[in-house]
Amino acid sequence: MAFGFSPKYSEEIPLADLTAEQFLVLAIESVTKIGWNIGYLTSKEFTAYTKISLVSWSEEVTVTINPASATVKSECTASQVMDWGKNKENVEKFIAAFTEIKNTLTTEEMAAKYEALKADFPAPESENAVDSPLATKGRAKGFFSLFVPVEGFYVTPILVNINIVVFIVMALMGVNIIQPDTRSLVTWGANFGPYTIDGGWWRLITSCFLHIGILHLMMNMYALLYIGILLEALLGRTRFILAYFLTGLLSSVTSVYWHELTVSAGASGAIFGLYGVFLALLLSNLIDKGARRALLPSISIFIGFNLLNGLKGNIDNAAHIGGLLSGIVAGFVFVPGLKREEDIGLNVQTITMLIIVAFAVSFGLIKQIPNNYAEYEKKYTTLVSMETMALEAEQLPEGTSKQKQIAELQNTGIYYWKECMQLLPEIEALELPKTLHELIDKHKKYCEVQLRCYQLQSMALSESTNKYDEEIKNCQEQAKACFNLTGQNGQ
Image (cartoon, rainbow, N blue to C red; front, side, top):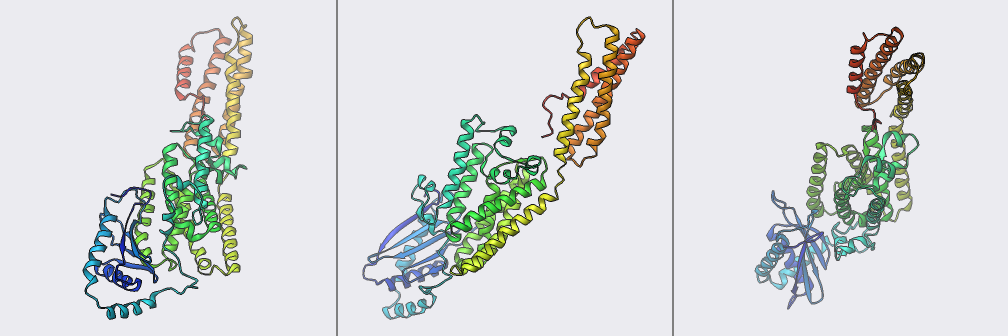
């Protein structure tokens, strides 16, 4: 059983009395006999993909012919850490088929078959030749190498390291590493609609580097490393960086548009964007058919599973969907330039167009969101301030004269409770989420009861009577039952 970021197993087979051309022919015949799909093919190397079943993903089998031997390697294509012996089984199956076929073909037959194979070899100067997306997996020599930038896998480690460093700094500054509170996340730059729209546009990007606990961070970084290994070498540094930030931006915008009061954080929107880009490439003819056939199911299942998982709640599926859709669009936009890398003009035009469209869509969606929360916070703060001043009418020192008590109740208490009652309809008229309207309804009931209570107290003092005591007591109990105002901020 192989274990690792991308489980694999390989064996060396000596060429013995066979030439490289003869070995290639026999290897192709062996793979055809087993029933694997041939992918990329050259005179010295080819890839094949095993069949997908209900209990197993496809594996990529690579045969590389060296001067004295050939290397047969089987590697998992899906994002898994264990292969349960499948890779070793594939290599053994290949060797068994090779041994069986070796003595069935004559030298002349092998020469004829090699000539037929040459028609499938790519031209050395081929513009569209693309290595298997799994090719860069071999550059990860161990766990720590995943965090070191190398050619073809340069941007991904940097993005992962930034996410980890931000998390560590937050932890050192006292943010809980298991379940950080909402206030801490917002302070560090999480995406919160009212603050984002009210001048905090930077939150659309900073939120892509914050995580809600260490488990959230680990899951996202694993997904980012996997898609980065597959995708970065195909896109190149510039497109990969662009894809991460633009899809991250659009995922954050979608989150704000969909959830007005949700505090959102995490790299998953941008990661879904990268998976969307890869999905688009797999749906094009940029990657060889065998690799597409092997990778498309695993990528599709990953996307589908995580979107369904997001329906459980406490997960910002809006950001996932926004990232995914923008990534698919970006992927199809990248395809022409990837096929014609030498055409600098085409690449500049497509990238510029993508940036303009991304910002235009973002601006358009944001402009459609009513920024009523900022107005709500302003009026709500005024409301709470007036409630506090009204309550001061009951906090007079012991021994205060009756006339002074009556004056305070009427000129301070009753006055400010009436002011609250006049302000509440203005707050009610704002376009706000249901939870805030429920809070406003509680305030309205609270102010009504307190106003009646203060009026009764004033009347009792003016008339020097106890006949209102029971009603006053009932009002006071109703006011306490409305809610505890402490800490209520509608977030």
